[in-house]
Length: 322
Image 1 (cartoon, one colour):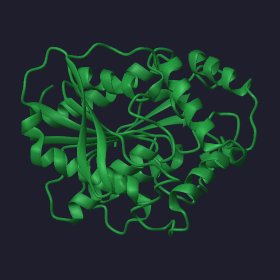
Image 2: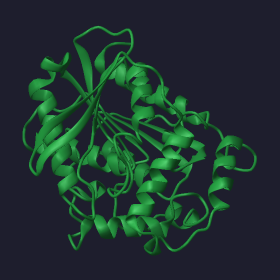
Image 3: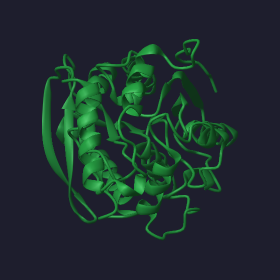
Image 4: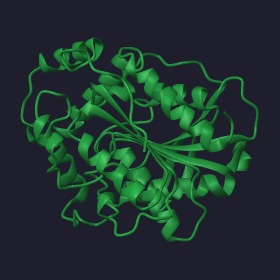
């Protein structure tokens, strides 16, 4: 397991990350439970658009509907600029605590990832809690992944070169989808790239306490996400908390990216260590001077495009296209 990443400035955070955080902390901060979900969703989308920028040009962007267990699942397909079919396939599961996020709010990062990885990226608009609690979103992501494997060639992709990428709650979904495919005896993806993933509902590791407030994502907010997502379901279920799975052997190689000033840092790194202990090849990269969410801020924070480049390099290596 190889460490590394962006070194922090003397104050701990990179200056551009600190500027974003200062702006966040200058806003009113009511208790997480006091913010209506509709307002939280709107704020997330506004932040993504403002800090992410318009995004890079790609060859094509197509919206499609894939069959899922609860009805059709919206999927946005990004064909990279200058690439020729058949392309490697990436199933992308966005973050947002299983409550927030849309295909639009992750458009910028998916464009960047498609171009950098030279892959056809399928961004999955899975069902969100609380309207659709666990395991609805997971079921959608698993169904789309299987559909990409079955029909990816029709989209100009190579189903034999399939990878999973997810950030935050999407990293949780990617980790669980990878294990569910293994458990079903299906071909495993070439790579699981997990960006500051949610891996354990216990939220009791040191980083969760050290960065509980004042660093963007709060511990109180994360408890709210878990409560609405699980809706009374058992938090120790490995389909919810992948770190609690009994057996991680035989899972696809992993690239795990964490942020140094993030409540989820320690659980993401604990999952990387658990994978490695189970014999799974793992690369761990900690962006020490960053906070949760920086992956989306492509136009504002220098670490964001660097992180995409890191993930893309891991994808290219897994696909054999480096």
